Image (cartoon, rainbow, N blue to C red; front, side, top):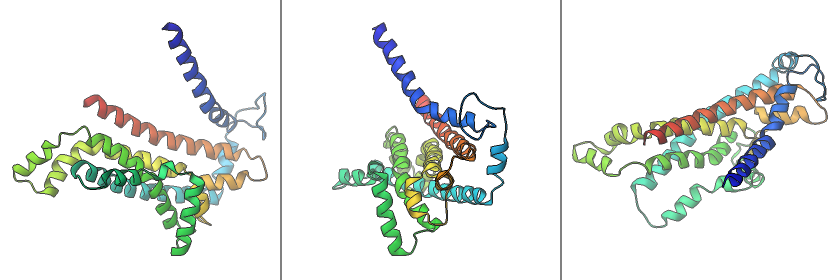
Length: 260
């Protein structure tokens, strides 16, 4: 048993090392004075951050990413909550097909999803616009919000809402005073997680963004054809932003489970 536990910990350590070692290296080299990522390291510097964030196109991309992520998180969470509540409250024919369709987008290869969104948005004249990126990201992020809200609603006694109706509350009053307070941690968690998904997403945004580049798309454009330490600086900011949102989301989920 002890050997099995030890092997499990070794496997987990190796997995985390495999995933996070390149990210840690990128963060370290973002403060390295040498242009090329080689050892031994040069002196400590913040020059690459200063250069990166003195470029107008970087701030434009950051603004685009923040706008898209904010709108995406609001729309995705609203649609995801509505979908989860429909599953929680109502029984209807083909419900399993409804749920399967709602959870489908993250299971599709992102290249296929990006091509499909590009074809559809081109037909509607929205390709290359921030609105088009928002639509594509909402399609991708909504299932995550739905899954979080659905998990929370599964922990709720359905009789609570019925009791509110019996006490004279209408459906909207019951929603406002019973359902939403119970789901509040899940809703905030969904907002953070979907914002992180949108802010960090590259493949679909690359297909549909056009000239309205988000930060991940800009990083690829800088990377093509040369090694630029500014990429490490921008990537570090993107990583820390996304991880902060994910950690907040996970903290809310953990707190929710702890109090159930």
